[in-house]
Length: 195
Length: 171
Image 1 (cartoon, rainbow over the protein chains, first blue to last red):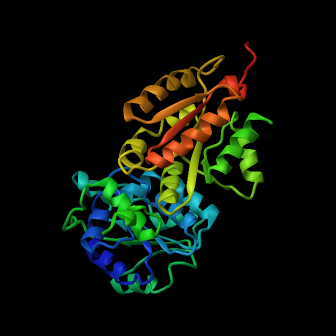
Image 2 (image 1 turned 60 degrees about the vertical axis):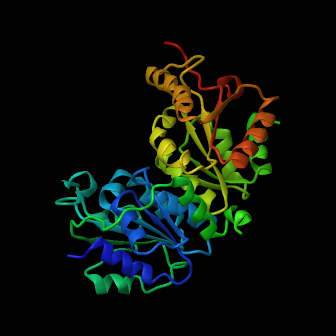
């Protein structure tokens, strides 16, 4: 069984061109933060299910930048419609990664629909995201990410992971997160106050 | 000039390019105009909160956007407004066609409409009811500029007095 923190570190190691990464609510963004903060990381502290729509917005605004949405199974189940929207728009610079542990881990490990029945990759394909695939193991995950992120999308990669919680927690300061993210994308005002 | 042309012209003057929406009858002229003009980037969303997330991402990426919806669609938004838009200081522009008043025929619309202004007030989002085509461009233009300058969202409620609303034949 793969591990979210480990896979997130492997993902971050593949980012070479200041790709934007949107970390979904809970353990998904905690592990993104723990993998090493980057100026192009955005951490969601609420709005469950919106990592993909936020990433889509960034991708539309900056078509030359690779954009990655990191989301959990419970979160994507809450907003499956966004997969159909993304399939219609076909943003070539958008990659979606679903960490599927079959549970609402952060609320006490209650099972999600993916535990025994729902199949995220099949749902994504049915939504029109034909380039959707299960990563078989860590090596396969890395192979799937050995590509440029600013073209060839949309791509969805899902991975079955263990039930380990994240090893850290993101700093809970939304305006700071937004401000630093915008600086990372070259759209922020923050530079005006830097010494 | 029709109210909808004036509205879209003001969006353009303020660099609001992304228009994410869940369709509505009253919004028809706005949505048709947005889809007919290459300046705009129209995106049909499956839910209103998805549309709001998209506009938030676009703003952070350097593109201004608005969300168009009907009153009942606003009912799906309090969580995304309270946990994303307001705390992250994102000047999302919300455009809501007003149902539930001045001749509403659907009791569900009439009830959800009563939650709209109190919800906006309780989250601290400025809202303007646009009911007059003469003052509408001024209110829209100034309020979008204020939203961007202060990094605060703003909601525009399109009254039936402006749009004509949705009518029905009483049985």
